[in-house]
Image (cartoon, rainbow, N blue to C red; front, side, top):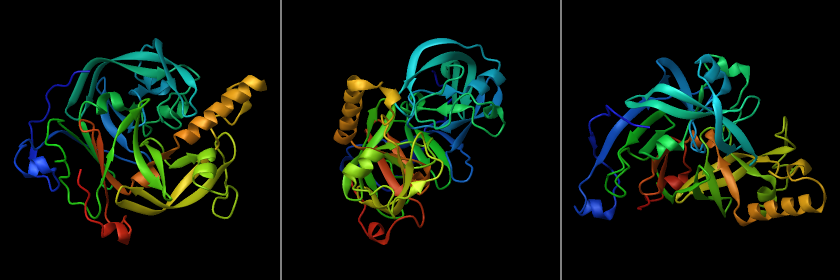
Length: 354
């Protein structure tokens, strides 16, 4: 991927900066490189307007996606020739899926341009990975109002990325700026500053869910926030099927539950009454590892791994309340709320400093 014709550096006055910046040791302000207006339907995942081979398309913003992908239907609509790729990407259940590959002659996102870029496409009849939800080969994907694929970390990591979900604005900044000098907007309350880990193509941060420290996958392609059943029961103490976590109609490969967490905290920033879907465990089905003693050992090992590193997925039902600045250069996520989304206690908390 190459980028050309980027915007000239645009200095922005930061309202929040690290000590080195405040003392004058660093004089490198934020430099805006790209800005686009995203769209969304019913508060779901945000779609980015792009051009692929001269045609207007949309890509779903996917912070839990390893690499940018097209749907099968979009590849067909664009008359792109596919060939087998050596890549295999895990689906939301951890199963490796074979992928095909296409070459796109011209791609642009705002001022970002690329020529002859190679993107993955799910193999015919399969499903793509990287947290794309129902991303895959259904014929409905050809509809004009449906995203043509996922915009993922292989492009995001080249910049620092700012996402204001209140206005659906997406901005890319140069990574060469003063440490901590990123909060150019006026935060409505507390500011969370969290360390970022990139794990298997997913952006992860530590959060506190109902008083328990847990790893959170920031998944902008998921409509809802979720935890697995084992984590809900053994780590968070949720009584599945009880009054506070009734069975959720529809299910996701097994029984799922609707649970409302009392509080989700990003450092000092706190959200209350957060909707969380409890999903079946990844390895709950016997078919995942086979029957018999060997399959049982594999499932037990997987469950122990979940308990050793408990995770939740933070989807758009929660992210819509937040403004996020992904400083990939600093390996930090800066989190503030949008108007009227923070609890009174969080609003009274002084802004955190990195």
